[in-house]
Length: 250
Ligand code: ZN
Image (tube, rainbow, N blue to C red; front, side, top):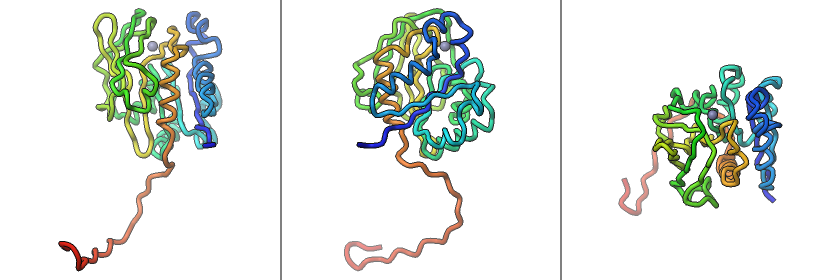
């Protein structure tokens, strides 16, 4: 049997301790609910880490032993230390997968890898969302129908300041007509990155079966094919190619 994919679910874990609605919905934190749904898939080994832990729970040992990092952050994105961001960036470029959820778009690691502000328009009033599945053949949408409906969500709207996605997987439409690029993928170095929009802390999004399915699929898609640091080496000029006597030759 193939080795399990090793996932670290990172959550700043502040809203669930300070906001009554978030606490009621996610008493042990969103990371606990996400971790449980990933474990249920059977082929994923999960650990969690939070902001308050030493090195934010992202020690060298943990990061080196992580195939895919899932990131939820919001109000404390600036509190993540530069040294940890550097560590994560190096690992993504070497091949670690990164899945960024909802307001994790503001995280220092995501902004660093995107090179843009990742700002957008948003509205804090509860809204309804339909995520259209634009890529039914993509591994991230395996088992997902034409769309996912989320009856209780937070609205995000364009323009979302990101580099053009290498593939756009989901587009959301909200009640008032706003639209948003909700599922986007990129590669940076050897690492695969997936941004997935749903996941506001006072909405029950991480209990939604389709959302859970998308996350499992995304983990399987983002797992490293290789893990290899970039190198800058001096080298010799290649020998001239020998021309062959057969064929047109050159
Ligand atoms: Zn939110």
